[in-house]
Image (tube, rainbow, N blue to C red; front, side, top):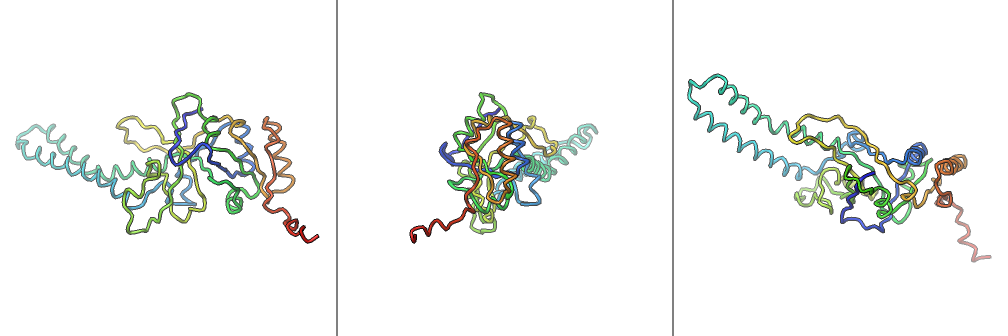
Length: 286
């Protein structure tokens, strides 16, 4: 299992939903793992995934630019103090130092992008109610699993130190707002990358768990984005399993069969009543 660090944007009593296709639900209850997706895999549905507004990225880049400029001053000073007859080895070392220093900004650009795209996430919806819109987007013929922040914490925390998983509410921003300040781009939990999204996605009311890929100190090589699985106590995590109102009766029977097979308490399974007949509201006229 893992260590779950819960941000101050959440309370243990907050209700969370995750909308799943039938195959993903089967994978969850059969494997007893949560699947974490690298942000690179979302580039087709939201190319801004992992990115912060321009003003925040400019602020981060200014730190790298300052580092480069300060070191170029040192290189300039060294070049002026090296005598013309200095050994070729020293002159080559100084030349390489200048090359590396001048490459600092483009190098950091690629590293920052790589960190963003390699960050792995598992996404939930924070709401007291199911969402017709999210059924349609993610799980028209599947299920929604319902839990709470506290139940998720208990289902994941095992005393293990790694992986460390952070969870918090996503902050939605107008990336084109000219009045944005860098401080505006911090989520309630102090995160920037992977925890800010464009305002167009605000309907998702997303709560996000994320894992940052570990890198050796001073490791500048780019990593390939990859997924991860984290063990979870499914039985303590699941508070409800709701079958989509758009799903067939065959799908509902399949969900119940899978839950019996995997030992999930069948009493927590129900079918969404979102599309139930509403004419009972007229019973007062009888």
